[in-house]
Amino acid sequence: MSAPSTASGRRAGPLSGITIVELEGLGPGPFAGMMLADHGAHVIQIERLGSRRPSPDILSRSRMRLSVDLKSEAGHGLVRDLCRNADGFIEGFRPGTVERLGLGPDVLMADNPRLVYGRMTGWGQAGPLAQAAGHDINYIALSGALNMVGDADRPPMVPVNLVGDFGGGGMLLAFGMLAAILNARSGGQGQIVDCAMVDGSALLTTLMWSMKEQGRWRDERGANLFDGAAPFYRAYETADGKAIALGAYEPQFFALLLDRLGLTDDPLFSDQMDREKWPAQRTALAALFQTRSREAWCQLLESSDACATGVLSMTEALSHPHNRARGTFVTVDDVPQPAPAPRYSGTPLGTPQLQSDADGLSVLMAAIGYPPARLGELARAGVVETRAPSPLREAHS
Image 1 (cartoon, one colour):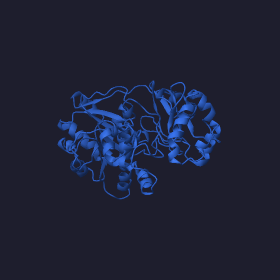
Image 2 (image 1 turned 90 degrees about the vertical axis):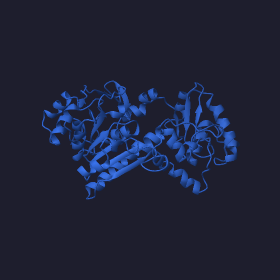
Image 3 (image 1 turned 45 degrees about the vertical axis):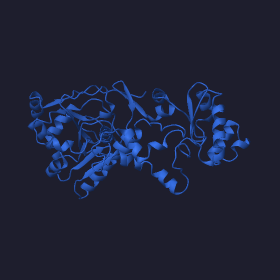
Image 4 (image 1 turned 180 degrees about the vertical axis):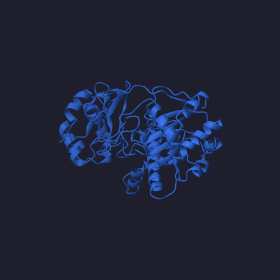
């Protein structure tokens, strides 16, 4: 049986029936909203009137989108009315900012006691740095995560903004929102979810804290199993200037890697965990991988238990046979992008949309008690601006 459809024709995912109001933000907040929308939630993204984002904005996909004059009485009332029947609200500003807009948790949760109020910040709602500016790099620096990345003889290497903004931020907020919504739906009350990237990025290092207590992790960069120090768990440049990644951590996989590389009888590699030999092993492997192209090494090692894969660019990832077979990426409105994940056997996810769902907004307005003409009246009065939908096309890259 096919999955049920929403008013806009998208297949419903496991979050069908959940409504989230998302106040415009950057990075982690929109990522949390995207995760929820990808999985079937009705997410209404509220932008400030006149706000213009670069296009295409993949992080804002699959939303019902409205630009609202939050300083006007009608615009302020619209957001409050949307939240009266919503399951959750997301904002990503410094503490106190949304309160000054008159949309703080005291107001919205008085209107709707079952509302889950999600707050996405870098430093959290309290603490000495709560009001300080910052970005992903600052939050992961303070949590100890950044110091783990890079070579021992150089400053830490910035891991893009994956650890703070998205892994320790947006994804954690989406999880927290759902946990609190489940609690509210099982008889509890709404509550505030205080999601801070410094907390989330610290949480992502839990394994390293465990290994440190076990005596298996040194509190220094470039000296451990998973930070590039181990010769069998790092990337190497190939003859064509590209790279190959090794992850042969388990002894049986390391043995297979040595066999494929013709190094089984080399005494230098006789003890995988002899840290004293790691520098020499890295040097030997670096020289070896410089003798062939990335493609040649992939043909020898990939698809085996040697745990070796080519390091792909974003463009190359689109066309890799495994990614194509699974549909890891999709193209919507001629824009390639990661597909929603994970996958569900009973409630498959719909295809993302890059433009706002104007028809769905009309349905939603009616559901909160606004007559059909009300949205048009607000638009003509300059209180709201809707984004027109665009044709939807899907093709695997």
